[in-house]
Length: 463
Image 1 (cartoon, helix red, strand yellow):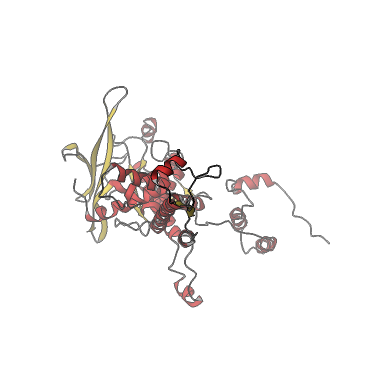
Image 2 (image 1 turned 45 degrees about the vertical axis):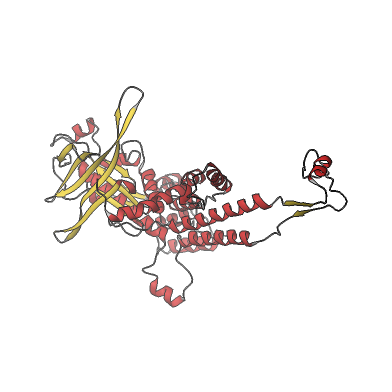
């Protein structure tokens, strides 16, 4: 049940980022993680009620969740470039064994990387007797699957030098297992799945919360009965795919979003207390005379009147309007927009020479996350291919990197046609560019286009 120090140092940040992207209900449920309580030491009902009202009036601006949804939408506006061997074509519609498509799995991974900077994929295969024929494998529906784990699931790991290569040699995954008590109720218990590279062989074992063995250590095998020389688990990060924990790309926006939320709370509290003004009354009347003249007390309003006596006065104390809070909110909103934009494109505040020098190495946070997810999913599919007897080298998977559609004008299209006519580029190159500009539907293949075109003579030039 022990966890590594790096894991412990990041769990609070993960919890904050998840609540921020889940929205206002989750943020308010997190309480002082987002909105400090100046009277936290005061446990009286009155103090608790004041904080509850203070929190209730605060408004969470859903910038964090919209940013993640927008970035993810930019990647998945076009389908991934994927090629799978025949044994793995089922992954396109059922990648995890529970009906999650490969595209949905990749989107889940990208969202996790953006929110917490980490996603985990484990390739698995049903255990069976070795030496089964392809027909027997198909008859039993024995299929490798890719299981997803949240960052919080992996709380301890080792990365060591094995044969001159750094390899993952141990990782512990925390799981929730359900024990059926009766027809209507289940009991949820925690268990630990430990994956090891023991003497060059991949093994698994399962333990309960007390550390007692639930499933003895065993070596998973593929359909031929062969063991693995590596742990078929992929850790996908925001910066790289090593086990070290990367900073989540969304963290900067979450922090600004939190500051914005706190300012709205202070602004709402101030408006609630002072917006109506304070009625100030002076009178030479005694208490008895006052009560006799105003038997129902004082009600402030246009249709009400009060009697103050010969020398009485009444005035409304009203705070002057100030723009400081509004300016602070606007400043934070501008900063959130700037940070979000910087996640898509590198900063442009540099000289042209510096841009040329650095062009080959710099990339946006979104592009980095996209490439890491592509690499992780590709590696997971290749492990599935090893389980199923397919050729890992035939697997291809790359998420879309064209975040914006091409803006093609008539001159650019004519230029491409001229290059095609001079055989500088191929028809596929032109069609790829037209798909990027939205002039050809993404789901229309070259074969479909060729079959629909038939024998069409090119247009004669206009004389």
